[in-house]
Length: 387
Ligand SMILES: *Cc1c(COP(=O)(O)O)cnc(C)c1O
Image 1 (cartoon, rainbow, N blue to C red):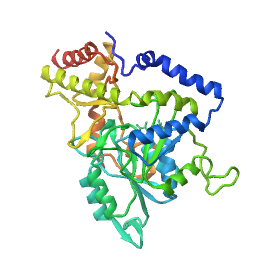
Image 2: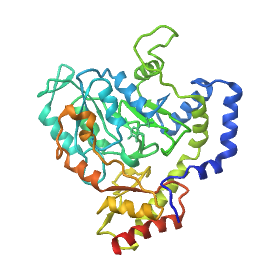
Image 3: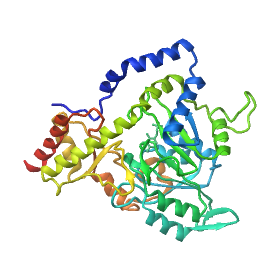
Image 4: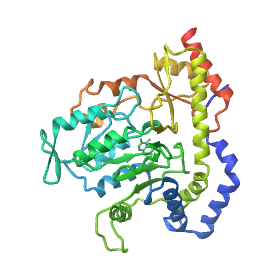
């Protein structure tokens, strides 16, 4: 039995009437960029997350870029982030001419290690006259971008304490974590700006690109809103040099419908994650496959169900032969990417991230995944290790 990594057709089949009606409204109005349907969506997300402001943009990547622009990050500034994420997390830093500075991930879980961050800051950061600088490079450290990878929040308590102590704003990359919580509060509300993506494969996915920024700060919200329309509030008068990055009404119409189902889907994902845990345990595969760690105080929303495993690439190929799709998020850590050669990070610089890149494998995960499909996946894994 073939098992896809993700199957969005089942979701559409279940929502066809609702989504088709919402799209028809946009077609009849012929208002495609921002407008009332987008505003309705921004309000709905605001309420869902408990955020003060929610601002729709063209993609999650743009959300990150705009957030950095709003904080005034520019050439030769430094921004601290994780080496183990999707490229967009670091691409936005480099695009502004700033320098990504990486801090390794934790051994358990896959997010930025706050002990390592503390060491880095204690060794390198100096706060003076309202500015934080790296004492070695003399550059300003302008932001920290943590990622809530695979749908589980990073240690936000530890992070915020350090961010406050060193006076560095936080931009949360919550692209994989809409609805995830830390200490009962939704991710995206902890930093200066929270960034979300509605790429079709995300837990809340549109029918194309889309993204959103949240903030609790009204002045920052004003600036972010201007930056998404070429830095202008009044048409043809420009306060900043911004982007053209708006959420379109077609996406908002689809997302308005899907948002009402998000919590039910999250629950379904969590049930499927528990079922994988149980099936793997029943097969006694513990020596080869480590299921994802659930960290205390968090609600993991399982954007991905990612195991660590022995002989990962061989296992992936074996499963592929049986029609089971899996994926590696991500095979090469960011500090070792060709485009960052000039940053001169060496192999071995972030051993925990490099080890994760060799071991991780994402198994099929979506709310409509059936029990027999999960059994098929786990039997495939068992047959590989026990043959
Ligand atoms: C998907 C994703 C992004 C970028 O979102 P897009 O909407 O695809 O531009 C950024 N960061 C992470 C961690 C992501 O998974």
